[in-house]
Length: 355
Image 1 (cartoon, rainbow, N blue to C red):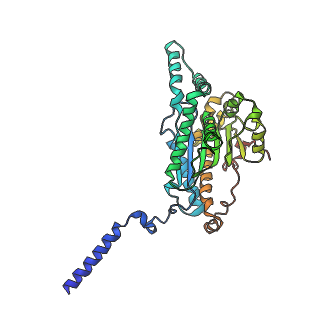
Image 2 (image 1 turned 30 degrees about the vertical axis):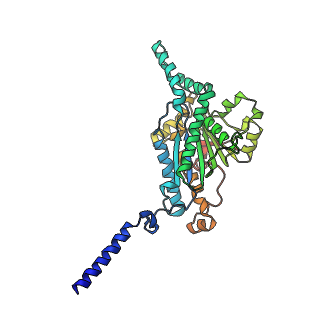
Image 3 (image 1 turned 60 degrees about the vertical axis):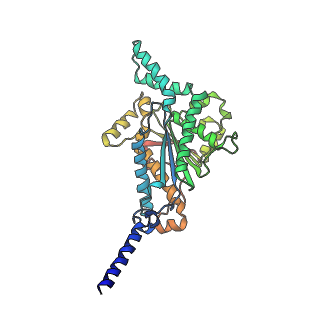
């Protein structure tokens, strides 16, 4: 009797040890009930490309964190489940060090010789310096940084097919456009070098000087890159950001068809009432271009739009049947590239899209 009890206990112990030895990844049924399983939606890749300035890795952690939070909350609203971290791969492409060294050397020499560079001086040297140095090896290196970031997020997805959303601010919109031209349109390397598992879903340009850079050639010879959706946003008082529609016939046609959505904000928004009030007031000042140009990364409307659009792109791949089961009626027929929040706060936004 004692031997039987001892043997039974031994068998139970062995079974328990075997179960504990099974890898966690192999026991999908033990995953938290409030998380979606791996591979439920199409993975989303988000690559940020900064503008002028000595940017460093980590400078965009707060922005990326806010976008991820908006993404996860919207997926949960649509499906009732929080997506896994692998659902959104995000990366900032840092290229500022390519041009910043020479610019800082010049500004330092100004100070040493009795000149005190103002913020406007610094902005002029930064923007002008980036524009004038954009050619030759510096341009190739800047574009290469963007391509590398895109390759990295694609690699992080493994063998899964995913969507790419590319966000370019200021001169970063020019660098992004050139990088994507090489990846999707260039014939020097066959059909281009775009990672096979990525589809370029959306391009967001913020305060971009593409219209200024375009003055190097005849406007009617310009050919736009072709993401599925392109949103170009700028603040009214931003002296750098400009609309794309006047650039030529192809740009105008894409704006009128809705493939390019032009959005002009009257004033920037911020987090917190006082910050928001300050930015609204700043938007009505005549000489506020330099300050307005820096506010895109901290505008909650832009953060929310990015997070929500990424969520809809991710959840939309569930299909009509799954969408109906989750009660997410909007995810099978998404609107074209429209800002979600500005449509509510329409007194603060001017859409330049013509239909």
